[in-house]
Amino acid sequence: MAYEIPILDVSESCAAAVTQYRLVTISGAGVKMSTATPVLARPLGVAQSAGTTAGPAIAIRVAGVTKVEASTAALARGAYVSPTSGAGSTGNTQLGGTVKATTAQVVSIGVALTSAAAAAAGNKRYVSVFLRV
Image 1: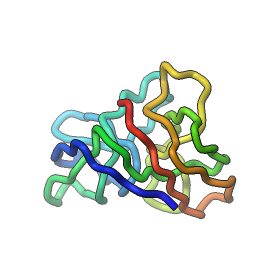
Image 2 (image 1 turned 60 degrees about the vertical axis):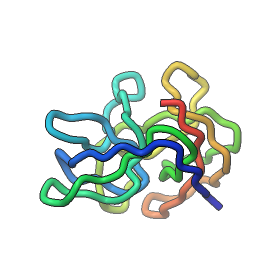
Image 3 (image 1 turned 60 degrees about the horizontal axis):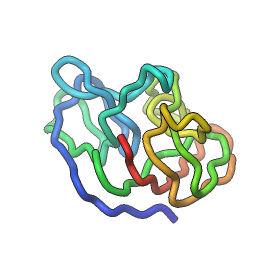
């Protein structure tokens, strides 16, 4: 079961629709879900709530332990995690803003403190990640 230990959250407005517990990146006048490849993603942190361009600013966890939505691949406790690439869909996909295991520490955003089994698209699963953004 995923858990959180907040240390530092920052408030940001949304430049596009944002899904709760997904990685976000800075974009112009706000944040949007991270959709680039892990090398280019440059995530700011993890959105603590969903947001829209018309809504109020949302909290972004930049330090501490946070829940993060996992991709469809299995994720082991202790693995480095990196952003997934793909359209930041708010529907039933685990692309754009979710995390996956990586062996490349240079593109990792943190370390998984809980695990998640592989699952089909549409099955939302959350892991706790110690952020190192």
